[in-house]
Amino acid sequence: MKTKYKRLIVLCFVSAAIIFSAVGFYCRNIIYISAVQLFETDIRLEKVAFETEKIKVTDIETDERFAVDQSLMLINTEYKISENTVFDITEYKNSGVKMNSCMVEAYGELSDAVFSETGKRLYVSSHLRTAEEQAELFEESPELATEPGASEHETGLCLDIYVQYNAGDNFLKTDAGRFVNTKCHEYGFIIRYPIYGYSETGIRFEPWHIRYVGKIHAKIIYANRLTLEEYIFSLQENTVYTVENFLITRQRPTDGYIDIPKGFENYHISPDNTGCFIVTVY
Image 1 (cartoon, helix red, strand yellow):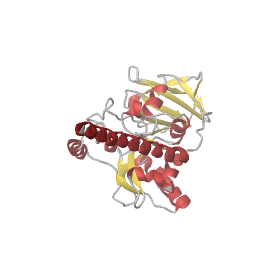
Image 2: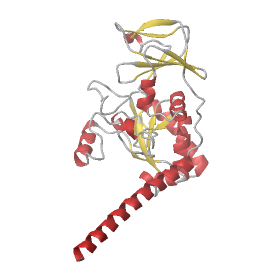
Image 3: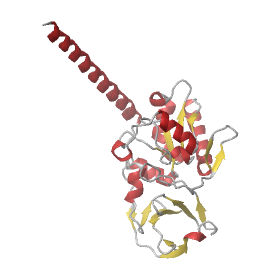
């Protein structure tokens, strides 16, 4: 009889733990859902026929029409950083925080907006990491850290942010956290690991981890509840799309050339780390 009661007590404790865990997860979701505005589902990419011209990949860096950066590189366990990739890194306002040069201005705008709207200052808990630093983290906590070569932190394109006294999951409980999660796309950032994206990213919801992709791409990703993986692979290769006042095309080089929409003066080009270039015409 005593054994039976002991088993019953253990079962009750286990059941209670499962229930409390589920309630906690549900509550976190409710906090998130209450923070998120209605998604702008009318923002859609549409295929368009457009005359194109061929350019040499080797000419991309020197052609004055092209603004070239690394903002749309996909980094994960499948698409790792190649050994010969050099990232364009700079220090943010003498703060010691290092980031990819393409996002410095945008992060300043986001940080200023957060302070203006909420009175809270954003702080950075994790920024650029070397491959060696990432390897150490992975060795210490392989269940939490990403393996070397598969972490965006090695690119300088992402930041882990917080406000005083509220980091990690608690970031979303603050006005600043909710502002970032609902408005960062307006400044060119996405929540890299969204609550709906685990099946694609393999990483749980991280409301503190922002990733720079550029304003129009962030807007599309946010509006359509996409992960970066889903967005990049939704762009069919060698196809031109139109959205708002932009043209977007994902081009895989053929014989050292890619096609771009013809007749424009301003192009933005980024490698996507899958062997293609994403060209944005604005």
